[in-house]
Amino acid sequence: MPRSPPGVAACETAPNIALIKYWGIRDPERNLPYNSSISVTLDRLRSRTRVRFRPGLTADEFRLNGVRMGGGPLGDVRRFLDRVRDLSGVTDHAEVRSTNNFQTASGLASSASGFAALAGAATLAAGLDLSPRQLSQLARLGSGSACRSVFGGFVEWRRGTRPDGRDCYARPLFDEHHWPELVDVVAIVANAPTKVVRSASAMQASVRTSAEFARRQRELPARIDALRRALKNRNGPALFALIMEECDSFRRVCETTTPSLNYLTRTSREVLEAVRLENAVRGEAVAGYTHDAGAHVHVFTLRANATRVRARIQAIRGVSATHVLHAGPGPRILRVTRG
Ligand code: DP6
Image (tube, rainbow, N blue to C red; front, side, top):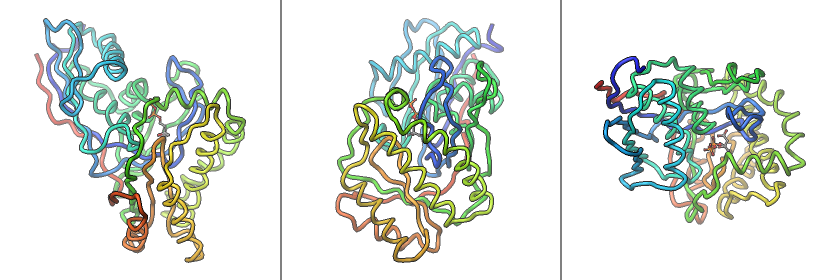
């Protein structure tokens, strides 16, 4: 039985950008990853989701940015709501309304913030009161990277070793105030293709077919330790070198997958090259790039270099805009009304 009658709840969350990528699922049933990953939850970008359980509704409904969704996205939301119904005992169907203040399915991690917001709003509307760790484990079942958006600041998703997944969850490493000088200049690439295949399926093709996958897994534990240290010590050059090494490793796995996964456009590649050039000219890593399964590129740098780095990126033909972001806070509950 539900702890209290179902009602309405709304929650706001932010996307995260992975500095160490999640890429490969060892248990698809429980969405358990092969490797741990580390991300930064971003400020300014937001997903807002409202869930209302309504007696008499014959099926779950999902609107994204005002548009009624069907097909895959609706199926994903329904499966997620089924889990919340199983946990809570609620039997009603729900209306889900979600808005993003940024582009959906473009490599800006809308599924991460979307499922983190859905997990928060749906559980509260169902009368459940989950701990952040439980919420992270639930969000993971909607979209792996969503388990990290349950926290603000710098977050590590630990792969865990238990077959039942109880030790697989995200936890905060440092809060959003840890390193205020760290800036993420996001290069928005014009005509970026819309993501058609979910990363969860694409990465399984890499597990099956990329000869690079196993090598990457062997390299990761040392890289993860080094990255945690660079964050702790607020060591810019170390962080920038590590995230580029990691991003290149992720891209090699994608490109050696059959069929090959190519997320970048020519413009994205020019952004990577501009960062390499800037570092070569300066004689040390003053900036570092990373990207997810999309064409937009995140360029991390320190506040002192941000204006110069941004101007350089903005000057590249095909970069339609640049956003200057920082580490941001975790989820915010906007509304809870029971019964
Ligand atoms: C490259 O968790 O977004 O962004 O469940 O298909 O939404 P879906 O997968 P998702 O995969 C994230 C892949 C990545 C790396 C990362 O965020 O760690």
